[in-house]
Structure formats: structure tokens, C-alpha cells
Amino acid sequence: MTKPPPWPKPKAEIDAGTAIETILKDGLIDAMDEVGEKFSAGEFFVPEMLMAAQAMKAGLELLKPHLGEGGSQSKGTAVIGTVKGDLHDIGKNLVSMMMEGAGFEVVDLGVDVESEAFVKRAAEKNADVITLSALLTTTMPAMESTVKATRTIIGGAPVPQAFADQIGADGCSADAPGAVKIVKELVA
Ligand code: B12
Image 1 (tube, rainbow, N blue to C red):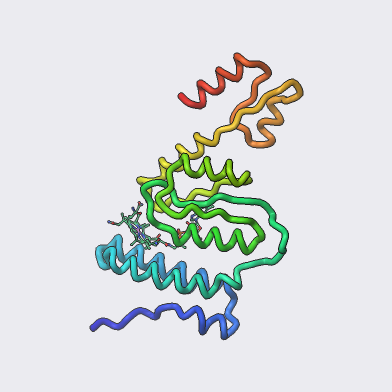
Image 2 (cartoon, protein in one colour):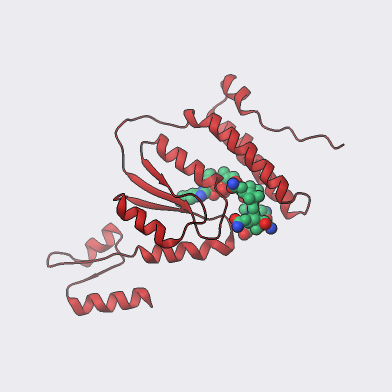
């Protein structure tokens, strides 16, 4: 039987006082990268990736209480999820945990999430940001459709283009025909 790799032991490292970032990076994330490399090389298959995922999830649960930086007042609300067609959730969960730790309220929609669901939940929760995760090159286009679904154009008598640029709006117009023109361009 081949010798098992030196699996990271987060509990022992936490108890030993190792920096949380070190445990996360050198222990968990680097180990996962190795799993990915072995999968690419045809040495590991989906069951091995699943086992690694379970180990990583267990490790992250141990690290979770140590990921915060305090503050009881909510700094804002984020809707998070993994895009349609994609089942990877470890990175998304980590982002979620760290954002919670940093004081944000996080609404986690899980994996395989439709663009419309992000937009709907963001509206319901009056969210400040939508946070999309994708691990497959084939699911990256699903990010674009969500971003497109959340395009914002602004206008009104006092509103200049410079303000749209400043706040990251997708377009700005001084009049209604201009609004229609921009919307047409955005949905084209
Ligand atoms: C574990 C794993 C799985 C597990 C997932 C379990 C789970 N619950 O997540 C399982 C076994 C289910 C799986 C399945 C598949 N997988 Co997979 N998987 C992996 C693996 C080994 C690790 C991913 C991981 O969790 N990394 C650890 C986390 C912490 O890192 P991360 O996700 O990158 O997240 C970090 C950053 O990206 C970032 N981040 C993540 N999300 C977000 C969001 C925002 C907004 C921001 C700002 C940042 C951010 O922050 C995170 C923390 O630093 C990777 C290889 C790799 N090293 O990435 C392959 C990998 C992603 N999988 C791959 C493949 C091909 C598949 C399958 C198609 C295999 C198959 N033939 O069935 C299926 C697809 C299933 C599907 N429809 O989704 C390929 C993707 C290739 C590609 N370029 O598209 C990879 C790269 C493996 C490889 N080398 O070929 N997989």
C-alpha cells in the first residue's frame, strides 16, 4: 500500500498556535491544489476529489471561529452562491465565512444557482453586493448572465455621466431616448 500523504491536521495546528492564515494556505488550500494537479495528471479521480473536499470542509469548520475580525454591527449584506451548472462550494463557503467574520451578513444560496435567483434574493434582502463563485471554465459564462441581469443605468436632472462612472453604474442618460438607447445596447 502506498504511504498516505501528510494530511493537514488543523486542530493540532490551532492548538499549537500556528497562524490561522498559515493553516489555511499551507495546510488546506495547498493540499487541495495538489489534489487538483493529481486529478489533471490522471492519478486522482472524482472520488478522491470528493474525499479531499470532505476533509477540507471539516478543516474549515474548525477554522471558522478563528476567521473573524470582530464587530457586531452589520457592515452590509452580500448574496453569495456558486453559479448555474457548478457544484464546487468550498471556495464559496470560505469567502462566505470570511465575509461573515468581517461583519457582513451573508445570504448563501448554495450551488448551481440560476442568475435570476441571485437577482431576486438580492432585491428581497436589499443586498449591497452579489458574490458569484465558479470553478469550471464552462460555468464562467453564467457569471456574465448574472452580471448582465444586474445592470444598472441611472438618470435624472442632476445626474452626470461622471457620477455613473463614480458609482459603477453601467450607463447614464440625460433623457428618455438616451435611456432606451443604452438599455438596447446593454441587452444586445
Ligand atoms: C474538490 C473539487 C471537486 C469536488 C467539489 C466538492 C465541493 N463540495 O466543492 C467534486 C468532486 C464534486 C468536483 C467535481 C468536479 N470537478 Co472539481 N475540483 C475540486 C478541486 C480539487 C478543489 C476545489 C477547491 O475546493 N479548492 C479549494 C478552495 C478553497 O479554493 P477555490 O474554490 O479556488 O476558492 C478560492 C478562490 O478561488 C476564491 N474564490 C472562490 N469563489 C469566489 C467568489 C468570489 C466572489 C471571490 C471574490 C473569490 C472566490 O477564494 C477561495 C479562497 O481562497 C479542484 C482543483 C483545484 N485545485 O481548484 C477541482 C477542479 C475545479 N474540478 C474540475 C473538474 C473538471 C471537475 C468535474 C467536471 C470532474 C468530473 N469529470 O466530473 C466535476 C464538475 C462537477 C460540477 N458540475 O461542478 C477541474 C476544473 C477544470 C476547469 N478548468 O474547468 C479542477 C480545476 C480539477 C483539475 N485540475 O482539472 N470537484
